[in-house]
Image 1 (cartoon, rainbow, N blue to C red):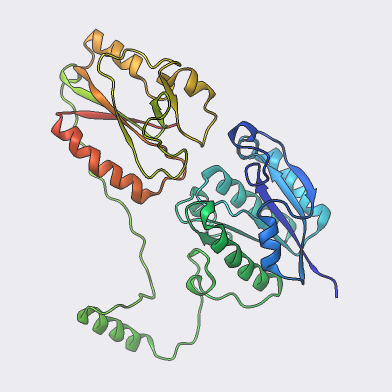
Image 2 (image 1 turned 180 degrees about the vertical axis):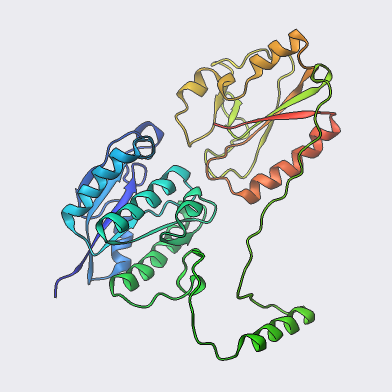
Length: 349
């Protein structure tokens, strides 16, 4: 009996080629397993073989979508696999987008079943959840040990044409697909059961979960900017040289607060970025490109704004969870209000 064939897609980081400095590499095809493919092969078992691994830089793929897709599709078609697996991408945004894009293309253009995996907050989830099975993973590669068995479990069901159960049963992210099934009780009875549990304060699971949307009220307009105190906040990771608080380059667990009283310019000798999700060269050469202290000092001199607040707040947005981001903002927003700040300019990358 011949083995089922799988082609695996990963980025330059998981291939061991490099980080952001190698994110522009073009697609390349390697026979057999590479990087996380070794663990994935073990979880898939003896009846399935990862025959090839396709590697592509995150920047190259996202900046050359049409060309990258054509190149990768040709590589996949060459091996004619039974299944295509992309990732896992965890919370790496560009990687998740690439995984979703190419998995959908393989599925639609080649008729080959595809599966990918990423963290629920990865932008690739909202882009492709309706098109693909996306296995839910943890926030970072630290969750690889849990991610691999979950991917393999779903992959084997797809390869063997088995019935795929619901998201909670199979471990994939909800796709918004409603499926008819026969239940033990009619809807009215199930609804009453849920209502009784709710009234008793007991745990119950709704059959129709509703999305939760943030509702943010816009701030009041500033009547006179020439009298306003403006603060700078960034997720671009700008920190004093040496990153004194050791803010993580990805999945930040902290933020920094730094005094810029008297600082007119963020020079290469005094500031840098701690961010690991973009090419740091230009930000390290002149951190004002991410945190525009120099421009705001000019506006301060011209009288266009009242003053620049003496502290700026910074963290890295690369892979940082919404939960942590919200907690950071809740904390330092109180300080900004207490310091009489009228408005914040929030910069990213």
